[in-house]
Amino acid sequence: MASRPPSPDAIAAGDTIAAIATPAGHGGVGIVRLSGPRSHDVAHALCATGLRARHAHHVRFRDASGQTIDDGIALRFDAPRSYTGEDVVELQAHGSPVVLRELLARCCELGARLARPGEFSERAFRNGRLDLAQAEAVADLIAAGDERAARAARRSLDGEFSRRVDTLADALLRVRVQVEAAIDFADEPLDTLGAEAVAAALAGIGGSLDALVADAERGRKLRDGLHAVIVGPPNAGKSSLLNALAGSDRAIVTDVAGTTRDLLTETIRSDGVELVLVDTAGLREGGDAIEREGMRRARAELARADLAIVVLDAREPAAGRAGQADAVAAVPRILWLHNKIDLAGDGQGAGIGTGADPLRVSALTGAGLDRLHAALRDLAGADAGSGEGTFSARARQVEALGRAAGHLAEARQALAGGTLDLAAEGLRCAHDALGEVTGRVVPDALLGHIFSTFCIGK
Ligand code: GDP
Picture 1: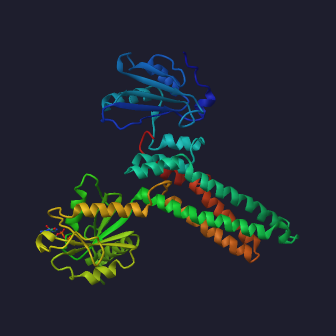
Picture 2: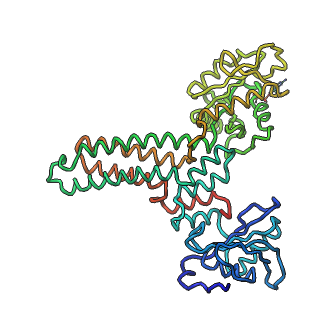
Picture 3: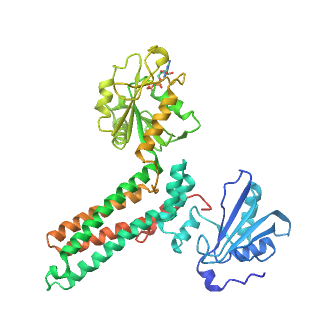
């Protein structure tokens, strides 16, 4: 089947992008994806044959001289029924980095250009195939650290989160119309315009919004992981413990950009919990500017922690205990650990992690670490719920929802006080904040930032 040449309008509508859509070097199948008005032409030239939409073609991918780069499967999707809403072609080849790079280069010779990170999803968003929350869920699904996080991202991608936001935005819009009308017909008494009904509607929206904020926050925790800090007196074995946890294959060692190494050392993720080492010994008065900055960060880390793991030396657990308890007093959950049980020789049980019955471990020998892993898994699970019905959400979205709730509360107050124009303004701001979640109202700069964090090819 011959492909039609693209119309000039189609070319003007956007250029054609290409990218390797699966990580190279993993063997198996590698995919090069094309999107844009010239996709079919590029694929036609590359495969030396036309493609039928939504049919799998076994083809040879050829270079400029007609030599075979590889053979594989080509799939054509016509706009608007494609991931991006544009003409799309997917080329499945062998998962060799060399082959995939050559295919990509050939696509670019034929008129495509390399896609930017997230550009496929950005196009899907701009063409109305996905809203912003769904597009972000694509990235979250790919980055999901465990099954629960993946399921939650899948629910957001299916639109569960967006539907709840849209339902509230629609309800809010109906009230806005009523309030704006009341302003326009200021001569009429408000009651004839249903002030009580408006107040009741807003109360209902407020309740639903609060519930949505709470659910989104659970989803954010599932995505970001439970945030824990490890504290304890010097030499108690905090770093050793972090390394012992990082040594398990569940953990990923990451850098915390820009942290002062003396005060905040490493961050790892283990059992769905993000663990940051905070040196509370550094939490003292005075110090030079660098030290004060380190302390500020250490305090900020403690302030946003969901969990504190207090590590004490099992041989002298009283040492520094009171100081540690003070430092973590405001953290919602505390897990007490006595480390170095190999030296202490205490014959006590494994412990459950309370102050009265601490978990007993040895970072050196690994004794008790199974219990610690189990405790962390429990805590991560308890905090994010079973994950059942949870959708993934991001801090950006939780923050926007929180702002919407704030504006709504102001609007309700203004309405109760009879200042309709203030109420209208509050409702408009609340409505806009909801729109930021799904991307109905979102500045281009923010969009650029969001999509730039995606992988190339997605
Ligand atoms: P931090 O200052 O709290 O981070 O403590 P470190 O992790 O640097 O450990 C201080 C010292 O205690 C090091 O020499 C570690 O090798 C040692 N250490 C840490 N944990 C254990 C343990 O469980 N058993 C033994 N015997 N030594 C340990």
